[in-house]
Length: 266
Image (cartoon, rainbow, N blue to C red; front, side, top):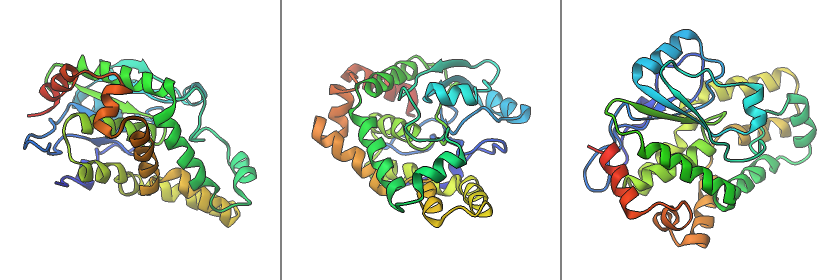
């Protein structure tokens, strides 16, 4: 059952794609608790008001999925009372969020489909890379330690859509949320981050970027059903289905899944 769409967004003004995972219904009729799980884009540009909002909201754990290049370029501003956890899914910026406009112009001028094709490779790697699997296992270890009510884990990358998006897919699956709701949450980036995406594309056009570059950057800035489908196809190849993947590849036990549901469902 698909519930809660754009009203998942948090009123953050100096960051993009900040949203609450509370309210989603599990298949047994329970709901994800509010003030326990927040997903987002980068925290490095937040002003004091937004940082205070996140602290008051209950954010106590900040999980950063970004590569070293991204972190060096824009370190997190960590909400007061929150503990920072550096869990880089990739050892370099495969999503290309740290590249300059000039670098992107050179790479994406010739083929209008290269951005889409690159993202398909990224999603294959998110599932198949042994290091990524270990990081997502460690992500769940932090989630399992978040046992106090109204204390939230915030997890993010730069855009809050790919590494963060798959983290949310894994987590909501563990909590028993149905596939269509999980897909709707994944695609919600295109709605909630629309102002940020449109600003970036308008900036490119103002610089007279080639249309192929604009098309490809749009593919890098957004999410697409094909990206998630690629991940799910690789999961099916490796483990049969998502639930098995949580056990066989992310090394979660039945007890872990039960604990997660006790912590995050009501």
